Amino acid sequence: MKKIVSSKNLDKIIIEAVNLICNPVESSIGPKGTNSIIASTDLPTFITNDGVTIARNVESDDLCINAILEILKESSIKTDELVGDGTTTSLVLVKSIIEESYKLINNGISKYEINNELIKERNEIVKYLKNISHKPSEKEKRSIAITSSGKREYGEIIYEVATKIKNKNGIKITTGTKESTKVIYFKGYEIDTIIASDYFFKDSNLIELKNPYILVTNNKIEDLEIISDIINECLDRKKDLVILADDYDENLINNVLAINYDNDLNIYLLKNPEYGIRKFLISQDIANISGAKIFKEDYYFGVLKEIKINKEKTTMCFDINAKDYVNKINLAINDLNDEFDIEFYQRRKSMLENGLALIEVGGKTNTEIRETKMHFDDAINAIFSLDDGVSLGGGISYLEVAEKLNGKFILKNILEKPFKKIIDNATLDYTEIKDEIVKSNYKKVYNLITDKFENIDDTTVLDSTKVLISSLNSAISIASLLLTTNSLIINEKVKNIDLNHEFNI
Image (tube, rainbow, N blue to C red; front, top):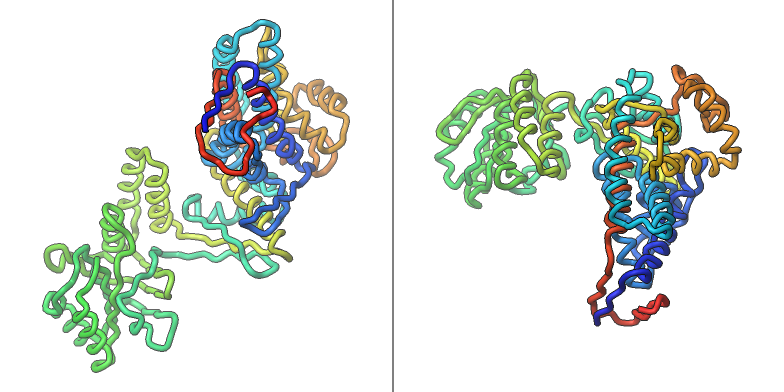
C-alpha cells in the first residue's frame, strides 16, 4: 500500500513528531531534569533520564509520524556516536529550530531561505564557541566527569580510570552483579580465547604461565614435524610453550595432548580469533611484545613475561618497550576513515601502552544499575572529547554566544533554549538567573548542584566544546533536512495499522 503526504499536511506531521519525541527528552535536561519510564516487550521496564535512550524508545502507531521520528532520532544518535554526550541538547535545539522556522514560514519566508541562513549562522556560531573555549586543567577534567556522570563518586571513578588508561577504546563499561561498582585493570595484551581443545584446560578453568615461549604464525599447522624443533627445545629446557596459529590439524592436536601427558610438558594451542587484516595485525602485535625472531618462514618465536588463559579471554603480559611500535600504529590511524577500524587500532594501542580497564557498574536494583551505566557512558565519552577545549556548561556558553550575535539571527533566541529548559526543570526563575549571569559579563554561573552562583574560575559547570559544537551541528542538520522535505511516501504492507492519518492523507 502506498500513501503520499505533501505540503502543509506534512508540516503538521513534522510538528507532531517533533513534540512527541522532544517533550519527554527535554524534560530530562540538566541536573534536576526528570525521568521517563521505558516499557518494552523486549526488555524489563526501567527508568532513565538519558536523552538518547528516551529518544530511541519513542515510537508511534502512525506510520507517517513514525517515519519522521526515525529521522529526528538521528539528531541525538549522531551526537551520541560522535562524542557520546549532548544528546538531549541536540533535540532541545531541534525542537526550537523547527518552531522558530515555521513562524518564519508563516510570515512568508521560504524554507530554502531559512535553510541557507541556518547554515551561515552555524558557521559563525561555531567560531564564537571555539573562541570562548580553553584547554582544560586536570581539575576541570575531573569536574566534567562529575557533571556528566551526575554524581561525584561516579565522576571520580571515571576520572581516575581515564587518567590511567588515556584511551577511550581501552575502557569497557558493563553492568555488574554487586551493589558496589568495581574497576578491574588489565596490564597486557588481550584477545578472545579460542583453544584447539578443551582438554588443554584439564580440571581447571584458568591456565597461568610464567615466562612461556610463544610461537606465532598465520598459517594452519598440519604437521607436527613443522614445530618439532621448538617442542624439543621446550623439552630440553623444561619451558612452557603457547602456539598461536590460524588453525590446527586434528591429529596434530591429539599428538600435542599426548606429548603433554607423557612428558608432563605444557604446550597450549590457541587459534587467532580474528580474520583478514585483523588476524595479521594481532599476530604482528604479539610477535612484537614477545621480542619474537623468525624461526622459519612465516613463524615467529619469542618469550612473554606471563600469560593467563581462561575460557573467554587470553591476557599476555610483557616487558618490551613498545613505544616505537605504537608510533607506527599512530601513523596508521591517521590514514583510517572507518570508525570501526579506528576503534580496533585504538584498542590495540591502548593495550600496548597503558593497558585496559573494565568498569563493572553496581547498584541495588537492575534498574538502578542500568541507569547508572548510562551515566558512566556519558562521562567517559565527555572526558575523552576535550581535544577542542572546554567552555561553560549548562547551556551558558550558548547563551553567551547568543548575546554576541548582533542583528537578525534565526538562532539567537534558539541558543537560549537549552539554558532556559535546564533552569525551568529546576523550577527556578529563569529571568532572574539569566540577568545575574549577563550582568557579571559571564564571570559568574549558577550551579544547580550547589544551588548558588560561582565564579567561572572555580566552577564545575563545564562542557566539552566538542560536545557543544556537535550538538548544534546535529540539530541544524536534522532540522534543515526536515524543513527542505516536501513529501513523505509510505510504501509498505502492514497489517493491523491504520494508514488513514487524520491529516487528510
